[in-house]
Length: 450
Image (cartoon, rainbow, N blue to C red; front, side, top):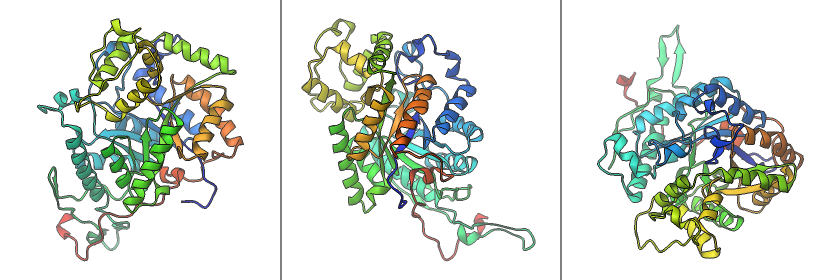
């Protein structure tokens, strides 16, 4: 870590035309941006103009239910980021990929390639995929339960890290006169044999500019927090209020310490959705405009899938209650607990809940002036609830442009955020050192490899 004063970290979570489920219905929204590379280049360059650490893309290997009610993540994020790498210079590039519906070798190769293509700006957001419908797209008879998914994820990560470390620095020599292209003693097999994978290696991609890509992890369940504490460089989490965020922050940092790692080297980045106005009243009016365009059929489908409930449109004006699941398997236990907290502490109708969830699905949502948005960010940052935020713009590009043009200068004025990039890699932006190696050099490598 740097000896400079602690600096805020900000990523932009970019979802087609915006995270808000009704963003596509806004009159100013250009729906051609859904699959238009020009739209994504503009977003990435806007984030880079704002000096953000990275742009961040989700991935869902299945079309969600009620797809007629909103736009979904369509483009493959790794392919998209390879294109964005050539259109930007400094911004980090974070792509989500599942450990349940991929293989370690292919994924290790693709992310190492992105790190080379971007000259050291790549990151992998690790997920296990909660949506059970994905199984049918990959020929699986059933979707593994959470315990099975996280067991596979742990071994998956172990294999990927070994593959990334299968080349030492300096393995590529390129000595034309001496006839030495590579040093075989600096390249090794990994010979992994485990419960889920058998992988010989090595990777055919040399060690990447960052040593290896940065690791994000997006799980907030118990196994998710343990996976983050053991492996992640940064953690993306949904925390709706300061007290929950602070408890999560302290919990994960303590787990990091228990795994023998430095808690300062694992950044906690809650999601933050925002509605910005010249006055507080204008900001709240903007939020209401978005919520008035929501389709309750979509919100109900997502809520029922998450909780295992069977709510209908007839329940919209009833008080929301979340019964004990009785041990029933649910899609995302951490999100269910957030919903349970709302049900236990508030009297809220189902209609009101769906409107509230429409912007962030459990993330913190704020509406206010640029100064008020900055106040929230500074409070969480200075008081042990966050090392920064994954920004979740409700509409794109408008919400991201408003944040870059009006909130970033306010954060800079307070000395919380950079006024220029001082490094070239994502690790530089995040203040992270080169990672320790998983594989140690061997005295003799297999000369047949080269």
